[in-house]
Image (cartoon, rainbow, N blue to C red):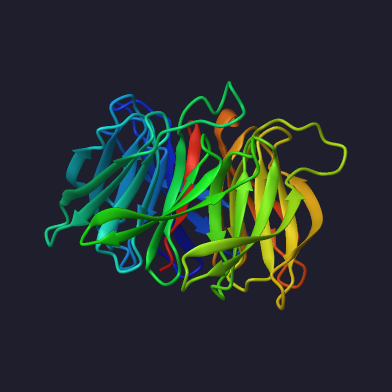
Length: 348
């Protein structure tokens, strides 16, 4: 890998007999991309997570009988070697994350309401340590007829595991005690909002959530001692005048902490917000087309790029970030991939 290129992995909605996880390279000079190699043997690898050492990759198989996969990563070639696969005992796992200390893998099962924790053994294999199931419903009878955990991750202190449950309009806090998920707190979100993805500010003071069903972005103050969130602000995830589509998807913050981005699948856009460095509050700046259809996921790449995974146009599109304003400019480069739905950069 040359000095001006950076690897990233892309997960796709592909069958187990097709290549479903792709190692790709981003040219940091001009934003062009290329496929390095593909990995088959996993169906619907819709979310990926890379460990801090960059030598293990974890993936969910978003199928009716869900699974999680663990891979060893070859540091020279990026090739993946399957180490283990375990059932989630749930349906349609759509998110996977590692704990801050790298000791456990967490997974969220959208359709069945299950949340998993697995201990990572010395040989890289997985041992399930906890399985909980959410129950209940909320006001949207079509989309919130039951619990739908859509993401799971740890807070900056590594004390709590947070689950955004779209079906319950709740963010559920757990403590991970000896590998066991022990419920700590539930933060209620506006009825019908549908919390989907979440991101902490680099300072650890604030957190930001994107709500799929009412197309909004929430700003929270994070109380690490109490394990709680206080709502500070709610903004539209869509530009003024746009028809709501119950389809806001992903949210990320730039490494500098000054810019927040949110993707929308109804108008195929990414919105830019400026973050007040003293209050954490947001100011909407602009929305740009993702250059494709259905941006389910995107990534902010260290060094000044955003990569948007456009699921329904089979494309990943690169954008350069203006370091002063955070504005996105298309590079003119597109990578063809089959139904890409997750992008994970490798910082080498």
